[in-house]
Image (cartoon, rainbow, N blue to C red; front, side):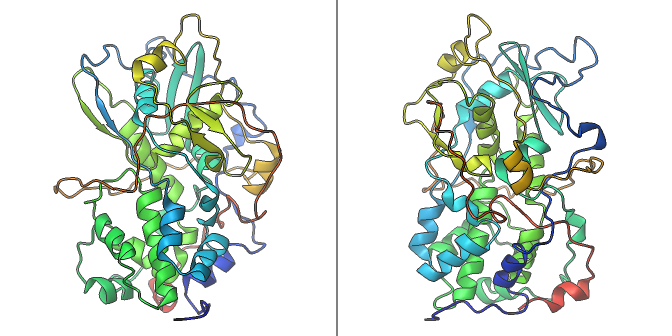
Length: 415
């Protein structure tokens, strides 16, 4: 067994160290028109009366089934399957290590059902807009970055790999097969296929995290793109725009999907981010849904869902009601600590077009992820107001967008 993980050229450990350098990191950038703007009471310009009306005119006659999955046990999974020093490298040196601070936040379908029921016509794939008790709430890429801390700036097209060359991880552990599913990654991780090779153990832990946390909403029979293996093998996963991709997948499955007939819905991407966003919109109110327990950055790390299950009808008659409702919700804005730690760009860049991401699925039946509990959400009391930032400069931050690389540059960095 290796006593330590050696940092070699092109390794994940090397790239993780680079992510904590003094180079300026940007997770999300505003347009020039957004600079210095308090958006807490902002209403998205809907243009006409029809655009500001609810999208769902007739609620489903039968209660729809909402599938919403998130691996809230990721920390226990990594501790169970990795050597202690490998887990410490993941926690301290990778761009996903801050997620090890998260505890007890479970995904649930009923909050998302409420959101879809209250969506406005002016929603789009770039902004989910809903109205609750007179307040118009908007969820955009900006809110996604504040909640998740994932890179929402880099461009996927800048990550070019030579696919004519074999990927070592795929060749060594999957015999070079082209169809590798999410469930295959999960089984390999649980089987500790890397043996005493700690560097590969770290890489498999990153692949496992990507598939069960960031890609939590995707079916387990989903094909894992070769790009994921190339990113992890080269160490460039830390610079990849995961946030943009998962925001797109989330919006694609959430925005303007509900109707009176459809009975089954899957919330893709990273549904827990939208759920925690709604908690943050109401974090000063005593709901029996979830409890804010800490003050980390990003905000996803701060919430625990309650054990009590509140059903859709009760939620709509209380928290989401427009009649005699004492609960007020408002849009979220970054505070000064978030501006500093997440290093949101003050100069801004123009918004990019919609992310083009291929998410075609296999036609195989879904399987159940046994370690991902799917509970029906619910809030609790207001959290302590202590100021706490873990590992300043690492928590919630990602590297700046990388310059476009040639195939030769990327393949030379592989192990």
